[in-house]
Figure 1: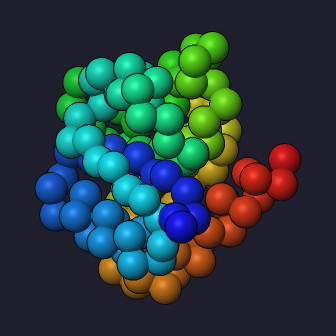
Figure 2: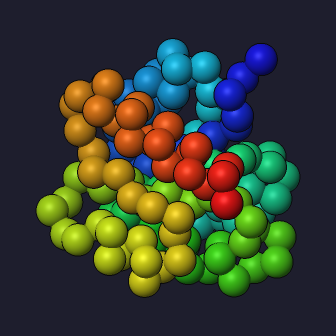
Length: 126
């Protein structure tokens, strides 16, 4: 049985596949999207436990999408985690957008999974 269902949203196909493989390897059921637009409806249809959002995407940034999701009745209870390779203050961006937390993109599988699973455990405990 999967640890939970995760929706990964990233416009970079390589990053999307790397994160998908990491999470599947760790026991999660993973669904993916390569764009932010339309994600609210996708979440409603697929009911993920966690949404991992890339911050820098064309059309609608991950932080803006997180803010929208937090205000919609159908999506506001989903745990949203921002994911970015940029050096901006992700913790502040997560707070401002009402995301549950944030993870810096890394090539270190163990570091990514440790941070992801710590945030998931914390969200389940609330």
